[in-house]
Length: 431
Image (cartoon, rainbow, N blue to C red; front, side, top):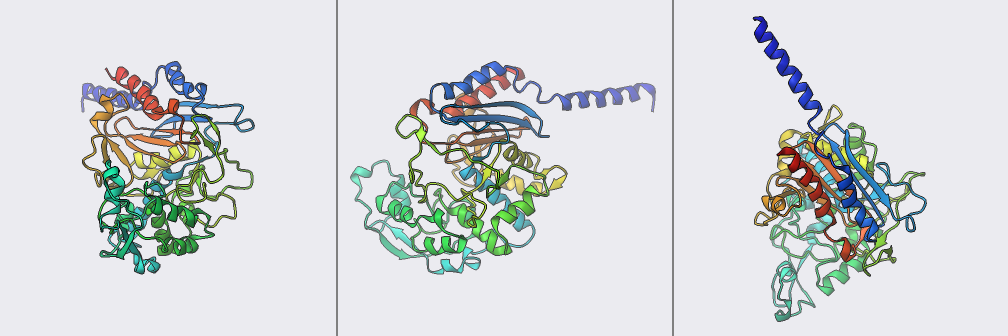
């Protein structure tokens, strides 16, 4: 090898090292503008607490903003270690555990759910009183010209429910938000989140009909919660232990779990339903009955679709595992092919804003055109105003954490504006 070739190789190595160390340097170069975009949601009274954090693939902080309304949140520090109720951001954690169990040969996506929850053998299906689909009725924009579906007809289930249908929200479960009074009231009355454990949860759930035949159409609801119970019964371990043993301990993630420890403290529940922030009324968050799941140390009901708590640092660690194709801190949790399956197109394929993977939304070019981010982002969110995204093009992740039920009107579009400002800077830098 001659001297010139050696120098070329050396210079290439130096260039690659410098580039890799600075790959995220220009993601945010105008902190003042981004801080201003975020802080206005506290200043205009539409949020009680707000935290935004960006990390690169190695866990290095790119940006962080943390703020609160001092009148409503007096004695808690808001930072990357503050505990938040993340609700549906629990779903991708539960799905990841399911996929890990598939890799281990413990379950298969085509398995009937009744293999693990035999109580489902006698599940029935609700249809409108003229025999139509409840899902189709719920999604209709012209309900004035439709007959009231209540009282419902209850018919036999025609198809077997599978684990894959739970992942894709095609199993027929729902929340108390269908817009159909007799369906919603029946679910809320069961107060599912107040069950003492998963067995009692299932006992209550089987008293309700499915919203349609399994496999018919995607409908967002309790599907992932049931998936968590499948995980428990397939392994003989609680969902809390599965999270610890398969995710947080081996990957050294500190801020992601179910129950509070003795010294942990959760933020209050806030509501903007009256277009003004206040503490939420008891029972106001009635998506599934009692307005919040249990988080106390003695809690034994682990809701795979809604029940986790996380810190900004902990949740960004988890989604960095997905960004790193299944690996974090030297531990491989999922195979690369499994992560690809999670973000590949599965449902809502005709939506102009993107498509749904396994409960991971992937954005379309329209999102970029609207100035609300970029195409190809992996996104998700939760009931109390939490949001996350993963940028596989630029190798970073972000979370927007709040605790707000029904954001006031002047707080609408918060995530789009904040993420839009992040990508305004990115696109400017990339030019």
